[in-house]
Amino acid sequence: VWGGWAWGLATFALIPPLALFTLSFAERWDAIRHDLELFFTLGSRKRLKARLLAEGERLAGEVERLAEEYRPKLDAPGASPVAR
Image: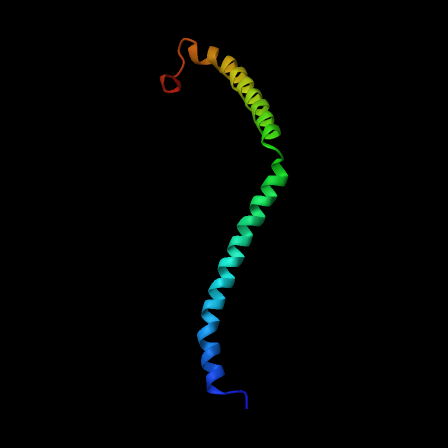
């Protein structure tokens, strides 16, 4: 009634390419959505750069504080040679 084997053969031939196209489209859309989320989460580059610079300065201060705290312990006589 509907063409029987011809439609069956056409469907059998067209389903795999359509499935591959759907998978690639879904993967691309996931990447695009991820990029959009990052863009809106991080905001502008200028703001991000300022935030990262401030965080870097804070971390540098923390490292300096820890270095000053542990330096006398490491330089003390009898300190473990492994710690040097």
